[in-house]
Image (cartoon, rainbow, N blue to C red; front, side):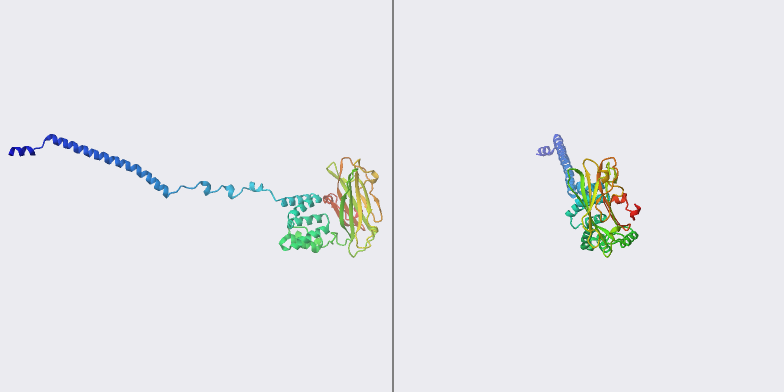
Length: 362
């Protein structure tokens, strides 16, 4: 019995070796499993952090939404310069340029076209009035100045100019210098409603040019000139001298007194200025297609000198070489050898050929 118990409690060495191997394998397997799970957890955490960062920091908007291009906020000077002007401003500019060049007819056409688009445009009305003044068509200019005056102070400087014009009877030229403006107004106060120097007894009330279609003539036109004495004056018709001169361009360059056929005729029967109504003179210009006018019908340097009571044609001069074309006219009125009124179309003829204060000095 004692022998059996001692054998049962004795441990086999091979059992211990096997048990040790099992424990080692178990530890190895546990270590492998632990390493595997640790390796899986680290890659998963990194994307999660990236996702969290993405949510916390939204993507920046495109650059175009943060700062629009400079061309959208501030146009370049070149782009501004290329902006086309309005039709009215363009017509206004063309009208002023044509008037400055002496082409008042086309200047008025441009300005009237601008006025049709904007009937209350103050700048257009002012330039129309100034153009009529430059033509000495004071009745027409006064109508326009009255329109400006009726607009009231809202018209600004144009209203003040119209007020001065209607009070003084003549245009007061615009001047930026106060001293110059004062001098202009002082000079204007010494002129009468006809635009003549103080003390003048006669003035031009109207000049109307009418061209007649003529198959045998290059140019066939007539001037209708109204001449009126000033109120309260007495006129000796023997002291009245009227000079009507037509001018041509020669070779599209030179400006010379015409050699066309010029005739004049009084349309009013008495033309002695015994009453206040204007006396009307008609002066015709005829250039045949076949050539220049005859020497006896051409104009001399004094052109058509008209004396009341006369009826006839201008004196003669030799013809100049070169192609001639009608340009315009100049009218001068003298009384008792003193200049009373002068008018020209185009107005630059007054600069090319200034009027002498005395008829004897021409």
